[in-house]
Length: 165
Image 1 (cartoon, rainbow, N blue to C red):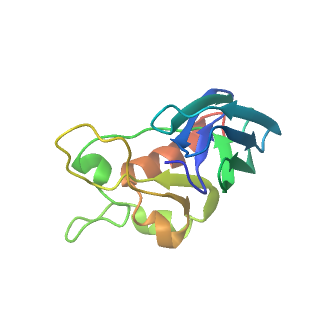
Image 2 (image 1 turned 135 degrees about the horizontal axis):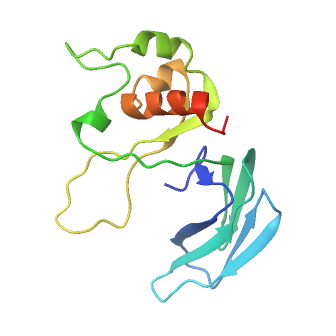
């Protein structure tokens, strides 16, 4: 989940994590310019909580250990988790013989680089997984058609009545 275009919850303390073969990981967060240091455990795994500020961006997060890794185009804002089965998996474009009412007009206005979705790829596991497959995507006509229709319309509704942009 930690990759380019992600959104982190604003005004909170968020968890960053990873794996390193080095003795220490130094993290630089772009929204406050602060450095955070963490030592990996014996397996090389590490995690650290870092505070976020008010909504904004785009920012970078740099991870310095054996190599330097930079995550780009990070926003601080509202993060919502949607979970379910077919009702949440229905894409905005609909399915064959199962259209989504209002989707054509919604896609005409889908270009919004501030709106991002992370869709977890479906997977089967016989035990708890330590990670997920997927990527953050910015909203646009080409990408929004595959976003959760419920999630997309929820954001559109909340933009009209709530106190965020």
